[in-house]
Image (cartoon, rainbow, N blue to C red):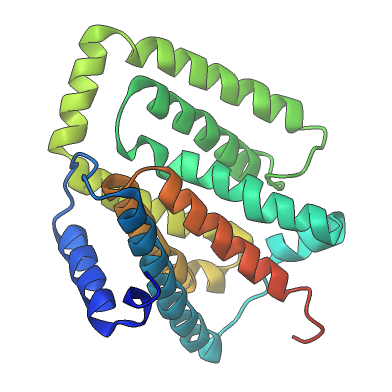
Amino acid sequence: MKYQLVNFKFYLQLIQELIYFIKNPKLIIENKKPVKRKILETIGLFIIKMAVSIVIALLVGLLYEPKNITSSNMITRFSPLLYLFVGGVILPTFEEITFRLSLKFNSFYASLSLTTMTYYLLTKVVYRTNLSLVDDSFKNRVFFSVIIGLVSYLILNRNIIKHKALAFWKHNFRYIYYASCILFAWLHIFNFEINTLNVLLLPVLTLPQLFSATIAGYTRIAFGFQYPLIIHMVTNTIFISLTFLPFD
């Protein structure tokens, strides 16, 4: 395993497979690679993701770097360990359920993703607060999200609708994959102050998240849900840990 991770051809193969999938996304059955191979390729994709995302972020930062108000808010509200747990475990799990779980359709996955997406939109758009903040609106956000999830499950679990939805997913997976990537990236605009300049620069500011989403969607389809979840957790944990260091 360790020799593969220092082999240029290994990364070249991963990049070629990733590009092929991005150009022609297909709702494939989880491949039959052994778990060790999936873990190895997940680590390789994580390294590629980190390298490319950092380069993109640095290039964007040379021109414009708005303050991440979400991180600043969490730093002030949480102790370091709690911040690490919420930002490195809870929020990645929430986001992966929202944007990646239902890339492979079934009634439960779709309704669970709708539940978390409803919570996300209620929190950010309606109440304009933080996902992890337990305030006066928290009960309402949870209540309406759960209701949406239960109703959607009851509807999607009916045989006729389930079969039609599954057929729709198979025939339109390309657009579903692209939409999940763009939505994941662009909703990160809420990490910054919502002003005219940030909105105009939305596609540029969220380029690192867009690239991350393409890899996460690919690993979810090719390997399984746990693999992009682990990548997301490790990525967040690394960047949160860096904020504890005594330099900017």
